[in-house]
Length: 119
Image (cartoon, rainbow, N blue to C red; front, side):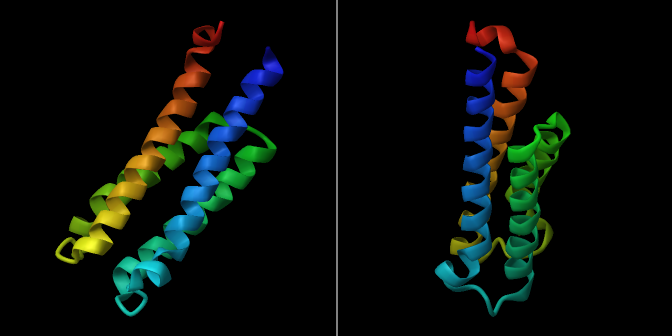
């Protein structure tokens, strides 16, 4: 049972890693590399999420999931805080990836806090 829980946690970390990669490459894919603020936001947050996901894959720590959750929330609000909400494609990219990161992180934290739900 413990190994099954560990594998479920790792699958959520793989999801976060994939989301981090998507975020990191989004300036090239969506085409906003010339717009510095959102591009750098995507690159920096993508690297942070990726590093945390890789760290969590090797040794799980709940605090890393909480940091991921905060980074996901930052992605959701950053278009308005950093002033690029008017660029619809860039804003949607940040918000959608942020919502997905928040969902994956919240799910991981929920699993840690409620292990009996798997029984």
